[in-house]
Length: 461
Ligand SMILES: Nc1nc2c(ncn2[C@@H]2O[C@H](COP(=O)(O)OP(=O)(O)OP(=O)(O)O)[C@@H](O)[C@H]2O)c(=O)[nH]1
Ligand SMILES: [Mg+2]
Image (cartoon, rainbow, N blue to C red; front, side, top):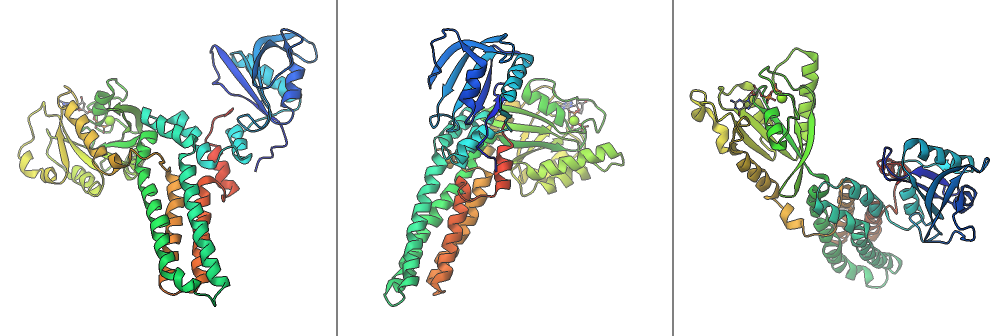
């Protein structure tokens, strides 16, 4: 785990030309370093906490002015990290910003790692882990609703729900332990049924609700939508048509697309991450084989599949293989090239029409595209997603995993309580459940997991 004894610094704004650039410093030396590089415009103005001061960044050795800046000092604990924080708003430009950063390093700061400022906010107890993760969600949110959910999580939506569950679990654990400590009283007898009922009603069920609310993550992460189909069926043409721009190469040569081409767009505010893939067929060519391998991988991970069938050609084995692979997945069949006459006997052979929701389009002319968008919209919102989108706390994958394990422990505890198993076992299950709840907020978590979470952040955050 990172030590918070030292002082860290980083450029907090994206590198490149911009109006301003911000350098952030956090740690015990922040103020001392700031005073060495910064000369206020009015000499009598001391650096006051939570005030902006105008002045100059100067080379501490030569005294040369490097830039005119605004500097803010936020004294601990009322800062992002709960440490002394200084932010220098300078003009932007990589050479200028890295020059100032180099001086800060000379004066005793060290380069911050990605996410280290937020990691300190977590380690110093200002935010829990779910709030720290929401910072990344806020930056990456793919829809307005995703932004709202991330903002709620930063304000503690997941934290509050998890804390409430922990309190209930601690309460029931105390009862179980009383039953262990005072076997002569009737505590144990009482606990068996009442305790089990309490666990089911106050722990297992609310955790179930929380796990189901995970579906609302589509607003933050976007729907993983993968276009699959045999070669030349019009996958790339469809991607381009949906995006209204020529993103993928389209040719009449089978096997044109080899890599996965990804883009993001919205259908009525629902964010879709859409991927065009290599057409599936038997191949000997190594590059195409790798492309097809990637397609299968993406198909397995997809939230929604768009299976393209070229109606102008007879169905072949590749089409049937793809349809079979998608049988138990959320998928729409997109019948393409309806501007051309259908292949002979197409309708009789198209038995998939009964098994999948089907939309007819022409990626070439644009016919049917609006119907397809409507069908995608309905497919996404057909299940529980709509029901849970009113939920405030929307767990991410990591939270869901921890919640599922916690649920299992609590369910075991209630089963064991009812089945007259020793109370020690009941208590053990409750303690394990509590530990897993603690993973959500970061109270009980490996350093390795922590580091991997914070490494997803950008520098300066
Ligand atoms: N007439 C007609 N031609 C189409 C339509 N959609 C695609 N095509 C043509 O079909 C050929 C293949 O289109 P692509 O979009 O490259 O097909 P693909 O599925 O991406 O092909 P691969 O990447 O090789 O697997 C091109 O010549 C397109 O112009 C359509 O709706 N109607
Ligand atoms: Mg293609």
